[in-house]
Every structure is written in C-alpha cells, then in structure tokens.
Image (cartoon, rainbow, N blue to C red; front, side, top):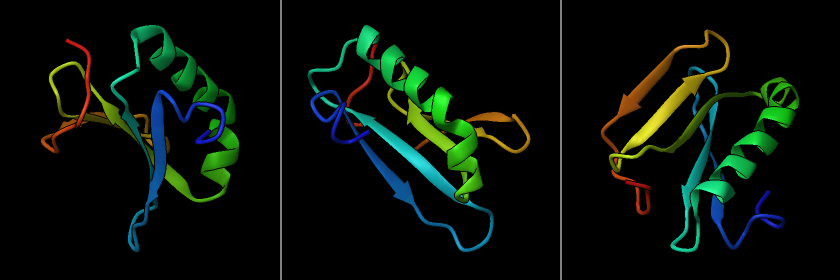
Length: 89
C-alpha cells in the first residue's frame, strides 16, 4: 500500500499486545476524496488476509479531524479523539 499509494496516504501498523494490531491510514496534503475511496476499497479487498495476519482494527481520518476505528472482529465502529494531520471537511 505504501508503494502504490505513497503520494496520497501513509499506512502503518500500530502494535497492540492485548487485543490485535491496528492498520492506521493517514492522508497526505495531496489526497482527495477519490483517492481515499480507492485506498479504502483496496483495503477492503485485503481485509481477510490482514485479519488473518493479526490486524483487528482499521483506523482512518474522518471529516472532523479525528479518527474512525473499525473493529473487524465485531464490526463495531467508533470515533476517537486522536487528531488527524489531514482530513476532508
């Protein structure tokens, strides 16, 4: 992902010792909504493999400048107060 979409996002893994790791997406200043949709669609096609590799959560910027987190095990969606660098308003 970082190779194919490096101009529009940064993808990383946040390690967790207790509940599963998190795939974290951060947009760049060049990202537009179409780019974001492509990145999220690509993640959707890889979700099963990522989950099998121990990734339980997806964390990405929302439109108010914080992050949404999706728990791939339960389907629960939450917002957290961590501030995102770039977001769409």
